[in-house]
Length: 442
Image 1: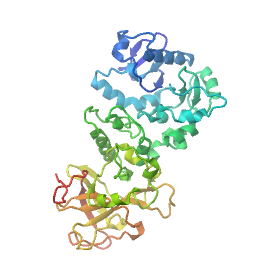
Image 2: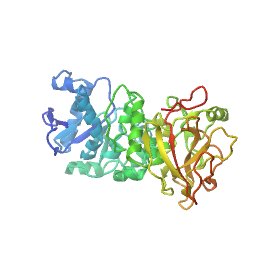
Image 3: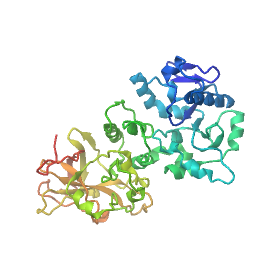
Image 4: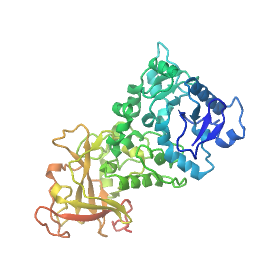
């Protein structure tokens, strides 16, 4: 880790030291005039340069708060080194957690005027649209500052350093309600970040649904911390990075809400968010245009999401322990599932007139406002292809209810043995279908 000495403004390395000095950290939006690591160590910047003035302002504020070091991403990471960049991004959530205080520098929000609803302007700050938002969850204390480094308010008070700092924080506005409304992150989590693990994968994805990054890969990389995932960075892979992130999540957790997202939403299309919200407990999504429904019913859909935007309506999808899921894993043939009929997790179509068997795979997640005694769960509707594998189909609009899902014997499956029937199947992650209507296997 590399830090700036707030007294000398020089960079100091702490890579070999297991215990780092106390430091504050800066969160901001990058501008066009930032000072990078190479220019900073060679003094190739102008004193009046906006990026340099940001560094100076942060160091002055840190000194006032009795802190000797600061970390700023523009000049504390040598981005010429892919190894260092990868280590920094994989460690960044922990760095925010370990920082004494996080200063958030907002260039588009000024001090509140008496006759101005400044909280509305604060909630509309462009900072809330940036992908790298770990400071809201990882930092112990988050202080918001205006363009002149005047204090706008504090997210929540915990672990602020220095007597002068404590006195200043007591006089600040508490902005946690406004932040919760602006981001969709629950108030309880903003106040108690250590409870992050209690929130489902779909909920955490939904918080990033409307955030933007300069690089496609960073849509995935900026989420590593909130999922406690470490993986190598491969700039140039584009949207495949988000797929790799989901595969890592599946490998490390049994949270099935990762399969609950809007499969009909074009991630690159700007849409009315209200139309993408999950409103009914027995459907995966709401499709405004009925004519599109027939088109999507005729084709297979991807098992994994393409973008966090597809989780926009999942802020209230919570974990459910109602089902006892057998272990599943991702293989080179797709997702390998083992389903059992004793807990009504699947149903195969008994109608021989259908070309393929249908399996309704219940998922261990539900809407958060449902009664615990009678949970209405989500599910995946799977269709068997000619190759013997399954693909996801968009039949979530049919009026299936969990209490109606009874395991039926299919001629192609093993016979029932008492009340239990085990079935192993593979679900393709791709939506590619050949000219004969078969999924592309292998």
